[in-house]
Length: 498
Image (tube, one colour):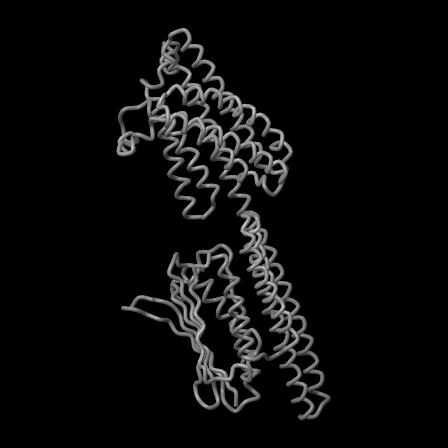
């Protein structure tokens, strides 16, 4: 009885439903990774989805009913070329393997020669298909496919050499999965030709091929999961380092503050009232400068790290013009930030130019989806008006990360400068994000929370700066609503100049 079941399972995959089972698994994998591509914008998922999709197309001509058959029925002509679909999924598989193992970065010479060989095989297959379209003889496709299996097998075997050379821990998923599919593919093809020569219906070899498809795709899915875990681990490591650095900065700040407090207490007993007031002013000044330093040390590590990674992505994707363009902007922004470390104040013109550069760089990671608008009153003399350097950066950062980043599209950010009266000017920062209440709820659910010290530090810096003027300063933050639905946040900085 068991032998009979085994014989039935192995020799009749079209009749016993094994083909439906295999195509069903591949269909689920294809749709799942296609959705993952839209969620993560990672081309690796799109390549894997295309790979499983063309495997389905290569086998769909064997079934004549069911959900997937009906799904493809309006374009059923695509199932008439199973050999072409097989060739396409081989090409996509190679591109998927190279990207999965980062071969372009780790072994660039091997990558270049491998891609050239792949282009030659693609050219051969294209010539065969065009020849078929002209002549209309299906045997051209079949004979061309049999010839294609020779360079395909040689190519697959040669590619194990660079795969084993890679130091990537994911290589064993690719090696084992591809080896299993290569063995089952070649084995099923040879068995197919043997049965065909004997005049026996060549259905049994497909069971071998389908087993190879299932095992290989299970291994590849595990590999993709492992790759995603490694990416998350790297991200967690970077966040841990950043948190550690922030804690060290906070400890240093507390230590200096304690020392300054001790100095104030000691001099309180020894100095006269005027000396005490002078010392207090010095303490406030040094403390404010320390907080400026703490703000920059908070901003720079993760901003610089992420900006360089974004530019690196352009270089990897061979988008040289974009890489050079943003690298120039990035270097200009860094120069301005470094220059601001020696200056307590800056002109309004310099502040706006620096913030425009900052938004431009941040926008790389959002695929340029942030619509940034800078508007200012032309009656203002931007070069003579002064304000604390980088005072608006924490508010722009908050608008991006706690408001706009939580939206999927239609991200707008406005920075508007206007004259409030004869002694004050006003800077408005307006975003159409999710609002402060929703942002706070989402923030509580995160494992790692980014508590921005920048807003508190900016308020203290503005307070210290405004002490030299008769007019007061103000920071007003309000929620924007449309039909009682949160539609963003508005921050207004009122800065004195007289």
